[in-house]
Image 1 (cartoon, rainbow, N blue to C red):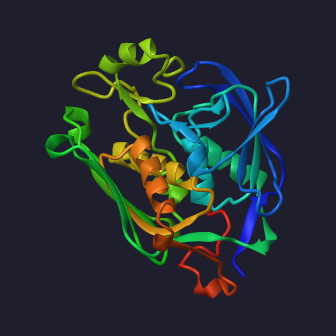
Image 2 (tube, rainbow, N blue to C red):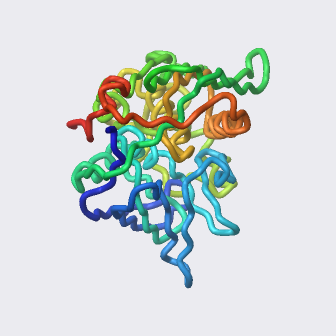
Length: 307
């Protein structure tokens, strides 16, 4: 049987929020089977639990925000991506402010934390959402066109194409495809950092965003070049970060997907629209388990892959 997983031990992380600039501490704890991933705001007079699911997403400006009433948790996508990439099903996350720390701007630090804590299997079948009919969402037309799509697939693949009119981005690969079953998430995707442009910083800060951003937790570009002294971690780091984000956004579904995801210039908002479009069509998906792990997609019977 392909089983659910949780952490073996508790682990912690501290940092600042990318958009809020607030100092924040995370405590990641094991959780019982079928819990899913739950954020708990422990800084409030009465702690509030926010279960990760597509309908809990209330804001997608520059990040994915989950809410329960007027209580929020911002910028969850990098941590969610690490959980998706490493196949972690059940997790309790205590958080001492409203935004997940940005750390180095990628998912690599979260991968390290989760791997260091270790993983244990649980005596309950892992439940997948298997896409059985294509689902697509689109925005705009012509030069402003964006789209994202899920197709049936026995496994989980992601294919993303970006299009930025900027010399530093144009000099890199702008299309990448990734197969989760390869076991290469930590090596190929997790280290890709978020990125932005100096010309947008003042605009974002006027809207209360990017207050904690800088060269230590993002790729920053002026009108011509990358400003980070150490350059890029991957030759195609920009598009790989978009895949990292998409994996996190889609894992907000609350179950791992069996599907082929493809997208052109998509972002947090469109990714959430895609999940909601899927859930609005009961004929387009089914829940499946694998009593015989050998029948699962290749690579899905492994625990956390090596770094």
